[in-house]
Structure formats: C-alpha cells, structure tokens
Length: 131
Image (cartoon, rainbow, N blue to C red):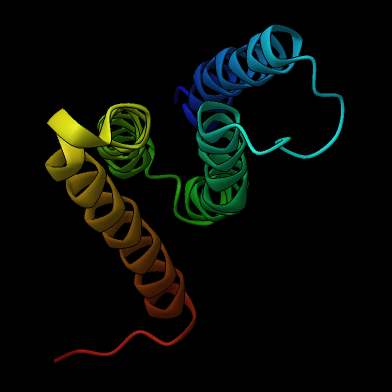
C-alpha cells in the first residue's frame, strides 16, 4: 500500500511557501515589517496565506487519520486531489477578486466539502451505521 497523505503534505507545504514568499515580497516592496501598513495588496497576501494555514493543516491531519485507520489510500488520494484544486481556486480568487471571485467561492465550497467528507468518514469508522 502506498501512503499518499505525506505526498499531499509536501505539495501543500510548497504552496504555503509560495504564499509566504508573496507576503515577504509585499512587505519588502511596501517597507512594512508588521501588519499591513494600510496597503491593500499586503493585506490580501496576508489573508490569503493565513486562510490557507487555517484550513489545510487540519484537513491533512484528518486525511492522515483516515488513511491510517481505514488503509484507504485511494479515498485519501481523491480527497487530497479535490482539496488541491479547491485551494488553488481559492488562492486565485483571493489574489484576483475582480476577475476570479467565483474561483474563491468554489474553492471555499470545495475545502468545506473535503472537511465534511473527512469528518463523516471518521465518524463512520467509529460509529458504523448501516442506513
């Protein structure tokens, strides 16, 4: 069995690094070391990075639980793939809201869908209901 959660953790780490570099670039360009200094571009970069970090680590933990408890790498692969597309959409929608707001919305829905799927899968593991 191939374990896939660490692969997604690596991909999401690189995405987070890219978002962090964007914040650093904005900080240097605007000469702001703390906060956003009233610069909307920096504020967007900070929130985009923060939003990513508010959701992705928890979902990776849930994916890891599912993979180790159920040995279902294929389920986790599809969840991780869906999350990856959702987070790319969300980032694009955050960074370019005038043109791509719909992507942010789809990214949010996709992220929440993966969270719900993961939570329900874990509940089902501990409380199998035959409905």
